[in-house]
Length: 120
Image (cartoon, rainbow, N blue to C red; front, side, top):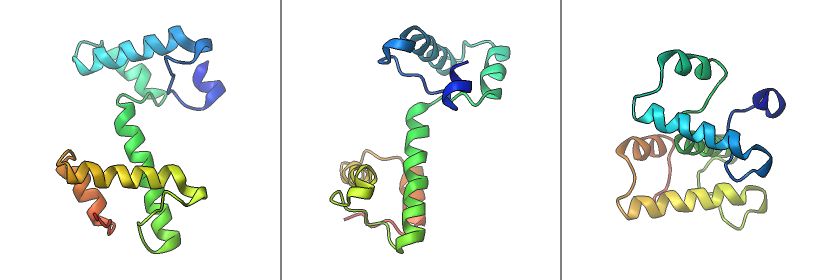
């Protein structure tokens, strides 16, 4: 019902209206990561587009936005002062910080480098 109404399966535990559902969703992710979730449940949830790793999903969504930004602007240098793309600019800056702190996976470095990301 949540997905039908919201067109996604990302339920926040901070949403008072859906707090218990959000907690249940979080528990399903924990069980999945521990490899203790029933395979039938995994299949059922996957079939409706359940996001197993919402942090990874969020990173990929911003990466897709950055690809679109580059296609439109010819570069990946999104300013945090760009009011239309402020959150993307903050995300770009956070990627540079993570890279400088050596806190970014080689896969993400490769993904960003592949589209001409400027690291400094």
